[in-house]
Image 1: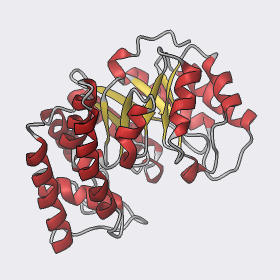
Image 2 (image 1 turned 90 degrees about the vertical axis):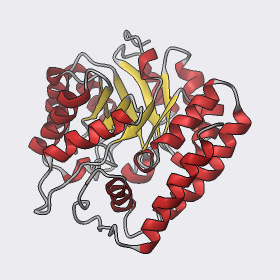
Image 3 (image 1 turned 90 degrees about the horizontal axis):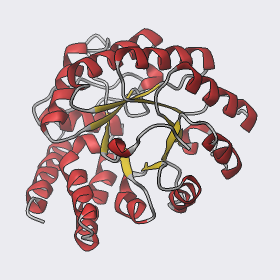
Amino acid sequence: MSKYDINKFRQITVALNTPFSSDGSVDISATKAVSRYFRDKGVRQMYVCGSTGEGFLLDHEERMQVAEAVVSEVGKEMNIIVHVGCADTRHSCMLAAHAEKIGAAAISAVPCVYYHLGEESVYRHWTEITRAADLPFFIYNIPQLTGFNLSMGLFRRMLENERVAGVKCSSDPAQDILRFKQAGGKDFLVFNGPDEQFAAGMLLGADAGIGGTYGAMPELYLKMFELIGRKEWDKAAQVQNLVTPLIYRLCGFPSMYGAVKAIITLDGCPMGAPRLPFLPVSTEDPALQKLYQDIRQAVRDTENL
């Protein structure tokens, strides 16, 4: 059982996109600005340098700079979870120690990417990361990208570690959320990962959600979370029925990350383009502009639910 009080992490968690300047470098000023942008929209928790944050396209120093910029800007008002997973354990531990030093609220990590490792390797990788920082650790299970799917056997081994406080469940089967929640218990956090099933994931036992499309429409996810908290499941389903087609449209652009950045830019917070090999999406694209208008209309349509 985790030694930490995890109740504060039961939040809608925006997976933060990393802004880049026109020369391709990390834009620290824009990183601070977008952190304020989400704070002002009512978001109280962010996940930094993960998949959406293009974390694996950033070098070690850049990841520390982004984490430090976000924590320094909004860390007193928001919980900042720093993704520290790297291809190797050594650098993951360095990022974990840095996250603790700058005052992050928690850390998280995928298993090693690229190499297809066995469960013992992943167990040791995650365990060493937890030893590097006295912070809550959230396992990040996203097998469609890493090629490694968290088994219940390894999951139960990780539960013995008092620093393991939860899991970001981004695997496709919705029932994985139920299995992890049943095994982890009420004092263990399960975050819904697939954005298109947020309401369903919450129904199956998720405590909160972390998502890459949240940045394009945070108000809609905050509204679903509010409605679920009030046990108004029918209304939450109404919002999900609006959100899921919007997600599919975001994924129809050359890159989803580029589309989300363009949406945020249209909403008044410049984000720049994603880093290659992710492709940019122009704010001048009529389809993107129409999607932005439809998102804002959905927000207005659900305000009084």
